[in-house]
Length: 189
Image (cartoon, rainbow, N blue to C red):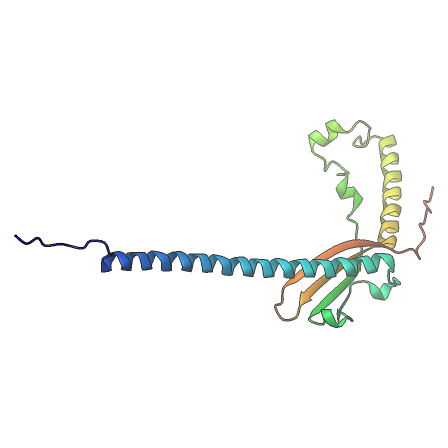
């Protein structure tokens, strides 16, 4: 009797198709992930460049502050970098006087303070008697003079660096000191 020999050593067509589909799925997932990683790296590099350029401009302002005049209040100007390698970037410099809020509101004068604030304050600031009123008037004069001095001496500076092509930007702010102004201590007693 003759025996029939069956050769089962190869892969069937179905097994090959499943293997190719799984391989294609994993390759696609890997390449997509790599693409996102490359894009994230490019964005991180762009953000780092914008940050470095903004820090550089802020440091230049701190080391060599501009002359402050009343005309500079709320000044906003946009310029490009002088170096050729940064020609794709521009920066916007904004200067304005520091504005200090009303100290009377900050310290909750005239009964505007909560009961907790009144209890936590050791002095007689919130008392409405005659000596408290005198102390309050002196404090108002001192705070008002302090506010005027701060507003003359301190300026706010904000630098925004923008990539002209991608329109990505980075903003950095600081305070600048106006060394040309002098502190006034004229309190009328």
